[in-house]
Amino acid sequence: MSGHKAAYDDLDTTMIAFVGVVGTIITFFLVFAIAAMSNKFESKQTEIKVIEVPDVNSDSILANQAATLTEYRWIDQDKNIVAVPIDRAMEIVVQEEQEKQKQAKTKKP
Image (cartoon, rainbow, N blue to C red; front, side, top):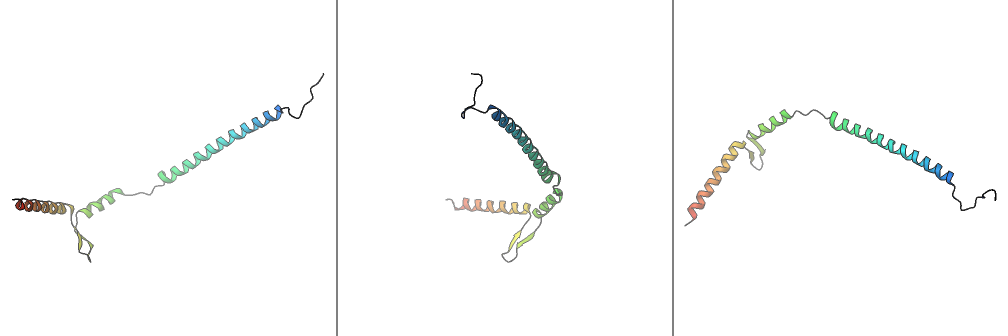
């Protein structure tokens, strides 16, 4: 018996090795392509969210909020709702609570 004749159920190791090598190379390039795309996407999002953020003058916003808390103004004239300065509002609340406590003390026997 000088040679071995291939049977239909023999493994084709050459083809298996070829498919394995080609599959490994394709997988390798796909991983690096996905990583590159992810890095590009992340860079673009950083540029949009961090670098191109519109300037907001926080000092003017805080000044407007402070002015709103320190002035009298109408909120709804039809319903007679008025905004008062925060300091005055706190004084009114304290006076009302003191009056409630006085009334509660006078009602007790």
